[in-house]
Amino acid sequence: MIETYSHIQTYQNGLKKEITHEWWQREDLRYVGGHLFLAEQNLYSIVHSARTPCYVYNSDRIKQNILRLHSALLNESLRHRIFYAIKANRNLPLLSYIRGLELCGIDCCSPSELLLARQVGFLEEEISYTGTSVSDEDLAIITRHPGIFINCDSLSQIRRIGRIAPGREIGIRINPSIGLSANPKLQYAGSKATKFGIYKNTFLEALQLAAHYDLKVTGIHCHTGWNFLSKQHATGEALLNEICWFVEKLDNPKYVNLGGGLGVPLIQEDCVFNLELWAKLLAKYFASKNLEIFVEPGDYIVKDAGVLLLQVTTVEKKLDKNFVYVNGGFNINCEPAFYQNHLEVIPVVTRKNNIDYSSDLIQVSIAGNINEPIDMFAEDIYLPPVQEGDYLAFLNAGGYGSSISSNHCMRGNFMEYLIYKK
Ligand SMILES: Cc1ncc(COP(=O)(O)O)c(C=O)c1O
Image (cartoon, rainbow, N blue to C red; front, side, top):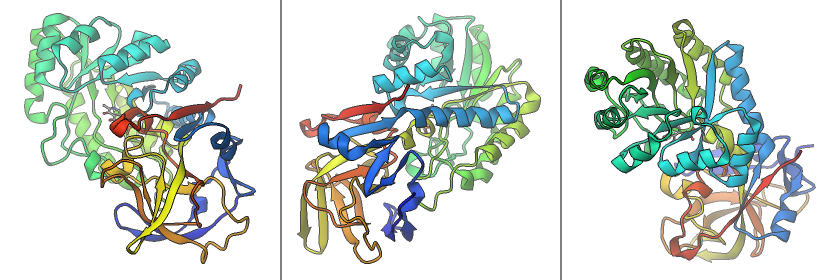
């Protein structure tokens, strides 16, 4: 039985909507008797017996996310590989779990990520490397792993790889001048020049440079945005069309790497990403080209598998605002403060068993414990009454939370738990 409640919510972008909280509930994430459960674990018993701040991840959700992606691509008979973008979450138990599944490889963007992937047991041929501002020192490390896929994102990188490893196969990260993103702050390509990839105007020069060093360009790589959903379908189609222009310039292309960016619903208005529609679109553009499709999602695999649990330290009204302060800050999860990405906040335990959510809710702003004005998790959202000592769950925190965290104000301590069932 799924319990529900509804209220008017204000999102980080100012949008006000009446929402019912049931939108985020799933079989593995829901209230039972007023307690929030993830993967059949009562989250209150975790915060009660352990420490907050903490992240809790549902390993089985991660597996289901990868399997769903595979089956959508297989349904269209697309030859494909999935490379999990390790930057989204590099928690060791989580990475080892993903390794053990043997369902995907790793996308990495720095020598340290590459070495971590190798330590966890990924083989060179299961790793794809796409970096930016790559130094000679980086290249020295990367080229010591001859079996990995490397996608070059600048003429300079092609030139320097050519000198160190002539004859090698490479991919080229292109910039198609089209961004596919739910958030302009997380757009990697568009009408304005960005630092990523090689544009059309220098692409032929890039191919000549590669030929000069006997580098064989066997792949095209393209990553242009974050959390795209089916409402971005038309832009997605324009993007694929543009990618084909680059692919067609290669002599013997083996793969097209479409990067990450596949979205998960963060607010009620977001519909679940229609993977079938997306896979059909890929088939339309690439099935006849005998190419292997590579994808390197991060968020799609881990974001909705994780929650961040924090304790309420202070409840106090300042002028006209009800502030709820918690024992973690934007250094532990920077998504709301840096990008205005919404993390749904809900109580770990609902105070009353049968709250009338249309009248009992209060408008609050959730503030962190860092001495900086940007340290707000949410502003003017509606929550059931909250008291000092209560616990709050921040949903969709499995990606780009712990991995971007810092020790700012020396408040960088948090725990991470992976729920794993044999
Ligand atoms: C090159 C590349 N590939 C994949 C990803 C993963 O993106 P996401 O987590 O949005 O799927 C990123 C994210 O920054 C990236 O830069």
